[in-house]
Image (tube, rainbow, N blue to C red):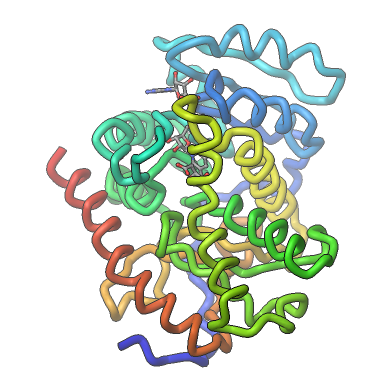
Length: 342
Ligand SMILES: NC(=O)c1ccc[n+]([C@@H]2O[C@H](COP(=O)([O-])OP(=O)(O)OC[C@H]3O[C@@H](n4cnc5c(N)ncnc54)[C@H](O)[C@@H]3O)[C@@H](O)[C@H]2O)c1
Ligand SMILES: O=C(O)C[C@H](O)C(=O)O
């Protein structure tokens, strides 16, 4: 099966593109597509508090001008403009980063894949517009199922696809891992860093707890470890059930998306050593038929600078990875088939 436990360093993804000037710290335009929604609204507020953003462009088929008017009163540096349904191209004009939380959320009993029929076309439509209007923008995809929507965006871009600039946002899994592990060990969550690899759905979410010093006391394969891994993999269900039909994670997701956006902005502005997990076009499991995979990514001034290998993992984590790969292949292919048939 997937027996390579110690993987050596991957070559940096070498593809140069037209630049995002490192001097643009005070001139970065970020567009949020789906800004009127449960994630979009708090995310817009958090991005308004981000000093590395100079201009926020808020788009939704419903309510974006209202959200923009509201957020624009916050006394921070950036300007904010809202765009209604028929002004998508104007919203995207000049965008350096596009964050997409547009689409329907789950209700209890649904899987993320059950959202595919609705969200695939929403994301594809938005990706087409981005490919036309701001083809060099960094694309941050939140809409589920992420394992399929990211491949949809890549295929929709066709020859314009730049693998250094497309990211599936899996940061919520990282955030949950820190928090949930802290509840087990008593350590401070802000001190805990867990590398979560694979994808963003159930068993495709693989937390590499063996690489986290605070998790060393766990007995790998034991009940406590299994319970923790299950909670990380199915944390989204906790929120969906608690919201009881009113949607899925929005506030923690907005926090996670703002955190990822901040990592990218820092790297685009020249900070070195920014390394975070994200679901990207990846060579790591290409030989097994996996085109996209989440692992630690070093971010740089052009986006993806280097895709890190997994490093040493435990036999129990290898089992998790073995379970992840077949699902991931199916999810990715579903997205690619959708895009190629459209
Ligand atoms: N990646 C993650 O970790 C993660 C976490 C939580 C939620 N999600 C996903 O994020 C998506 C949004 O969740 P939510 O709770 O904000 O949902 P929501 O229903 O509250 O908001 C979605 C927004 O998208 C808008 N929208 C729909 N079609 C659009 C289009 N064509 N263009 C622009 N906007 C459009 C809607 O009008 C709405 O305002 C869901 O698919 C959800 O599953 C992902
Ligand atoms: O669970 C969901 O459907 C939303 C999101 O993917 C999450 O992990 O919370």
